[in-house]
Length: 253
Image (cartoon, rainbow, N blue to C red):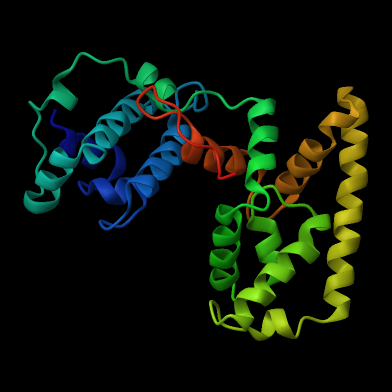
């Protein structure tokens, strides 16, 4: 069965972008990130109760192979068809090995190294301002979404936002400029509670002091309504894992 036909059967659409939940104008990075998240949900090891998990996973691998190839993507975008005999699809490939090559497992040390490089970088600043605009200045939502962030980072992040507002880079949203003291205190209390829970978890797991920052981050992401720890790992792996067997940069120094 052809790729588009299999997409229709398994995902109820022949639109490759819809399968990944993205728009046709998506960047390569967005396609990669969406492929990771969608394929992770149907990975045979993670979806043992789905009888179609293996087939879905294979189809997603082929779909990504098409959209990540400039020539094949151009043909699909212009004609709405997939060349089933193209090299990226005709190869006798193990799609699980292909996935593992694209997304090697992220280790604890990888996370700690990334955190050191990310904090204070231009990339962190750009991500923060994007979240500020997306959430229209709601610091609860911003702090729940930004990577590698704890309550201790709030004053520093607020300073970055204020400077950007002053320079005219972003709009001054009332939710940020007029945030009540009551809301700030509630956020601090919630963070203190999560910190205590993380410390208890740290003791239970037998982790040392060097793991403090990681544990705070894990607990924060786990308790967040918008982004749990698995989602954080998904973003990190999809954004900074090796591509095509070659290492990519992990943040800016």
